[in-house]
Image (cartoon, rainbow, N blue to C red; front, top):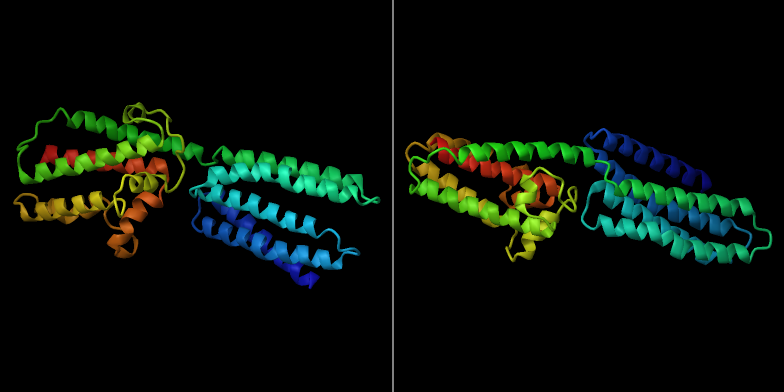
Length: 311
């Protein structure tokens, strides 16, 4: 039994290590490996190892310590996984993961060893050092290791804003044409979405357009979906999706816009994975981090204004 547990532990460690290397290099498959590795570690390896150790111990009076040890690992590693994957709720989970070992595990550990007259002081020092390392590692994760990529992406938004400022100076050939009026409707939806997402971040569009990092949670995945859902739109993102579909249909029926209509799905990035329209809102607003959702909306806004100015 021990040999199987050791093998499982080695395999799990290799999966986590490989996933970490892939994650650092932004290679595909990193997230899946980290999820498989950490879930296996917490839900399979740790329980088996602790149960085996408990049964093999001379006395079985430390059941509470074994349970709390597993619970601490579950809380800490779950918080780490959420943070690494940028899932919603990662911040609160990381905060709990930093505090939990000190307020739950450490008291139980100290009480348990105090009852043991033959305890080794070095074990206590090792545990305290391990808790300190855990706190430092959690704090480093909280700094967002992908922050540099997020900052670089602000340049895209800045470029879109510069193009928009130029497009505003160009005359529109027929402002009252059905296509241009429909574009204005879609632009209003884009502006509405931006305001909702900025409000959720405690910021404004003017601050965003300044090119500064003013987002409270720039790398949080799914926050845009929460902001849209809280506005009462159901399903979230459908208003924009339907507006763009209606625009493409109208362009296809309007002389001079046919070629644009043929390529509009690509221009508006309306082609979701698996070609399933129902997936598009989730793909664009729930599976992307905060910054990239806003950059997509900036790019869409620029493309719509470009169509108005050129056709």
